[in-house]
Length: 187
Image 1 (tube, rainbow, N blue to C red):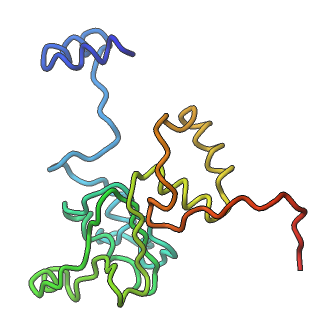
Image 2: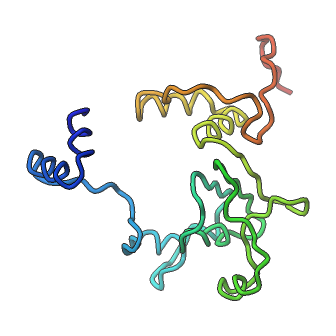
Image 3: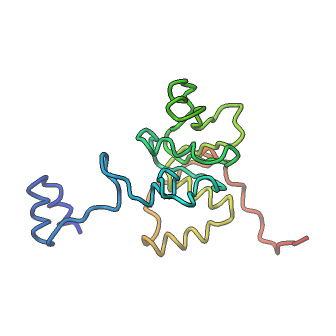
């Protein structure tokens, strides 16, 4: 808990104390810059020669969250889906946009397929704000709010305490006023 965090904040001496105290260090389940990507990533993206069934060509909706989309190969992932696949960026800032750069197009094997949030856009959506807030709003719009809250409660004990963003701050429509409770009509 707090003692481990304090020791970890002491730099090299602190992490050595933690290693000695707990018998080793824990590496998070992430890939650091310069490390080899896991084979599963290469298989699912279709970047592997061994891949039989990559995910991206059959993707129905691509949701990208919390990234600068700068580091390769991840910055190119938005271009791996079919041209008719809707793509949603949930992020604090715009990222991964089409650069209209002929050199980038040549390097990527064709047209630059980054996000296009301009007037000619037919499939890309942008939700600016914190990822938690964007996911909550998307779940609300889809009618999955209770399911999401249950999963978060089970997984990490609830949402972190923060001030709520103003309505409509995500780039998604502001919530409609709550209608009076009535029995739903079918048909």
